[in-house]
Image (cartoon, rainbow, N blue to C red; front, side, top):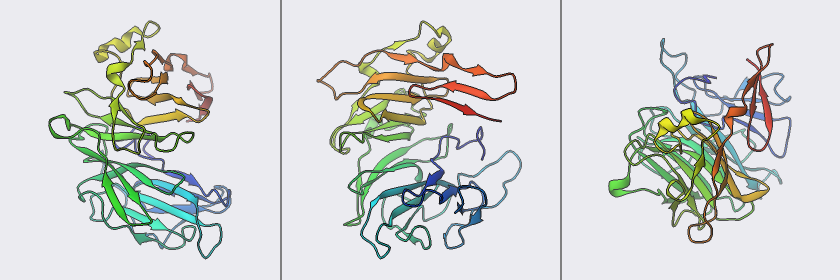
Length: 305
């Protein structure tokens, strides 16, 4: 899994088939794509998936592997309810994106998009089937020099570069990605390794045609966690986790290399001033048995060792 290895911000690697809830897919780092048809009791390598992986890495090295698996909305195919699936490959290879329209039984390469030096690290599909992808020049969290954000219209096969920062402002990559399911066309992406310009969350209300930065028009309440002030303003960096509240599209939460920030009102610039972000990871507790409990903005989750 490599939970603390390079590339730990990639994903989501684990996906559930929305039409067959016992059917899971897992994108591995070193050994291609795997699936389970019994809710994870047994797993089998998907032999039809073109990228087989690089295999076990050398000591102190790792691979990006199959970086994400995402499903699109219901489609009209020979299976009736089957929908498009996409899987990204964040290894040094020529082809980085594959699609299946038969529940993962067969796969085909998706042509177009950015240069092959750009690695797909995060993806999401909207209700119209439009695919959005974050790209980085490295798997991170360090060493990402460049990045881009693209969207693919599967009906036409056309790609559009919707990268927020360009020209002199282009620095680092993009690692977080979230779609506002309550307001079509609204999305957010977050930066990584933007050391000079500083990391931020970019917001768009028109499917990526225009963007505004949240960093400059928000404030952070760091009084409960004063050690976070080392970040020169406390917005955070290495922002790989990013999510709209599914019940309130104006609210965002994001995870940095230090903490989890929540409570950000993310309305477009000019409509409302962002309210203070709250550093939420100060509620972290460790149980005596070793399980880790983390208080996140919308739920409490438990992670065993």
